[in-house]
Length: 470
Image 1 (cartoon, helix red, strand yellow):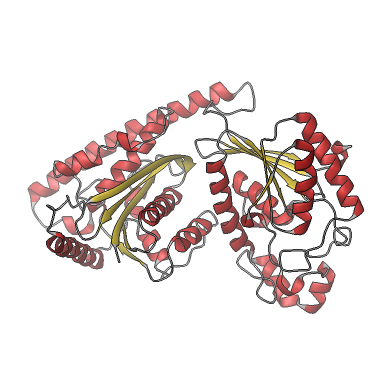
Image 2 (cartoon, helix red, strand yellow):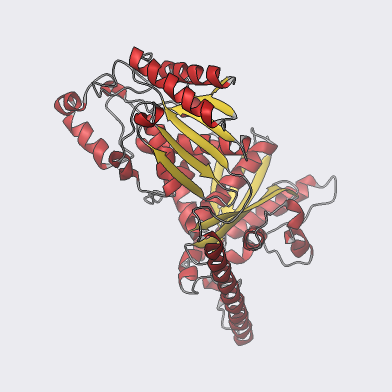
């Protein structure tokens, strides 16, 4: 079985501010770099960028060999401790990212290790390159990477150059020795890079050499470290000023209208809730674990009206549906009018409401009051009988969104789905908290639109009324 080393990093110039991540996958036996990935992700926090870097690194490793084992090394103590299960994940922006990362490889095939920042220069460099590319309005590509050049010059601590062919055993021993040294450093360190970032202003954190164990009493070394810190802070301030200028310029360009700066055609999802079923007017829980009802006569009429309106607009290029009967029937009516086929995506299914399926809210309140109160209070709570929590739904929808955005870049796609998936996609696009799900109402056959841009941002348009379909 192959073993990979994933080193990942992320940063935000402002926290939150313009952000990006970098990740590198190397062979544990030889130390050879196998894959580099980086991306500018728009405005985000340091921690979100770090989680995005972790997720990208794991996905890159999985693409190389889904049967491999992976050892993750990062200088974010927060991410390492949370992914190791020792710290609880509380922030709503990080929960779905952590859940996605945990599902890339089966449990037990990924281990995590904290390392000092100065050993993570390869991934750090990639993250900075991605942010620099984003500031220029460009996308990072592997040809932009200077991290390997830095490693060849001896400047990328923690990156092991390739071993000569045929010396895999020696390479493996060398890499594992480096890992052991990193573990020893982690055990003796009491300063996390997140705290160091907080003390150095809006940039990417403390400079290399500023770890807790670096002050050994050598005055020259301390003086050199201080000089490096001043230089790094000056560079950080310059970058932050440039980012602020770029942000002001982008806002000035966008000010006359609603659109963001031109980053090419977005992937636009027209979100259509299915038409009515016999359960809809009664306001009964109807998820993916119930009777899977078909449309009522009213629901089929609503789907026909939606089809006519969408045909008049003429913008839909593909139709993707949830696998449940009511959405497949709605999608079929619309697709027939548009002359398109229907693709099915399991990720668009409704939440499974467990034992609450088919019940009204009042009936659930009477039969399962404690479970209902817990469900209303926390997105992690599951409906009675092993249903799906809203947090799990969000994780599933975020992964489905990312997959569909990648598959339909620059296209307009009709997604025929359900109340909770549509609310969740809108919530994620707006960056709204989980409790906002209880503050939205979607009529049967209503339309919402989310456009996803190349910089990771999104815009939302709501048409929550069936009267516009007449």
